[in-house]
Length: 235
Image (cartoon, rainbow, N blue to C red; front, side, top):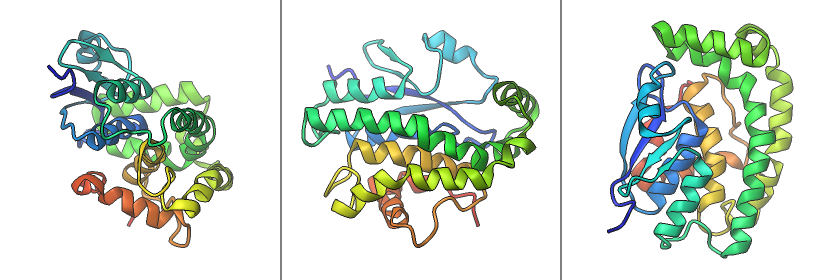
């Protein structure tokens, strides 16, 4: 039996059900690439008991048919590739896997942090009740400042983001996608963080004259418009 024929994915969401983790989108796109349609279970910030009951600590969490629990998006990706080799997430084999791991680290250290002042201060608007209060309190503790203070770093964050995206721009210029002539895991990695920004922030993150803009539109159209299933917050 295929252990990933009908997996369950636990996602962190807003009160209205919008996925609020770039790594959830990272995993969802990998599943879609493999032609796997998971059962999606949505959980807000204070709704952690189902996650613990499933044996995980963080979102996204993927529960496979054989009982395997994966609560890290990279582990999810690698397990999917092992269990369902085709269509591959890594055209080019091991060199492509190595490139993905490098890009993953770059995204974690450079791209994602640059988006925080542009996105995180707007997330409380998507939450209600105890989730709203929990988010504000926990992020104040994490960042050592209020949401308003985090938002003051937006201009500097845009400059940092522009620099952090440059390696991806060069890759897209060369082949149309980060992965070359067809989308694969490095594309879904970048898409995950930009989709998180797209659905969470009312600000325009990628300008129309940026080469990443048409690339993003193409990724949004994949898998019957999976990315467009969540509308952008920006007008």
